[in-house]
Image (cartoon, rainbow, N blue to C red; front, side):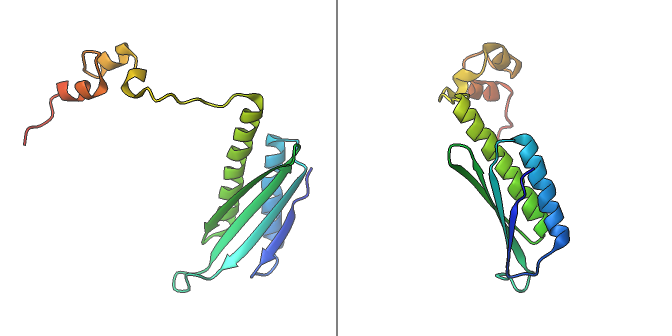
Amino acid sequence: MINPQITYRGMAHSPAFDDRIRELAGKLEEFNPKITSCHVIVDERDRHKRKGKHFQVRVDVHVPGAEIVASLKESEDPYLAATEAFHVLMRQLDEALDKRRGETKRHHGLGDAAILPELREDMGGDGSSASDAADSRGSPSP
């Protein structure tokens, strides 16, 4: 299991928060066992003094091939910021893995043409376009 390096800035060290970060890092390692290092920076910011303190969590992960995947989230709740940062990181790792496998999604600018004729008919159109389908449903007149 990877042991994340945890850095606190502007706040006291928290053993309970360390445990949560280790738990999230463990899930991350289950998701991608090729992670070589993980560095988490927890920064307490007091930009919004009237609304309370904000916590910014940054997670940097190294995987083979010298790729660095990082995520940054901010919230008034440090646990929420950490959870969101790791969630974003999982998506980034998944996208990077798909890209390495050549499984990237390709979006062709097909617009209405991408809607199958059967679906257009179900939407109330004659199969020519999605805008025709909206017109044929009868919009209220002004």
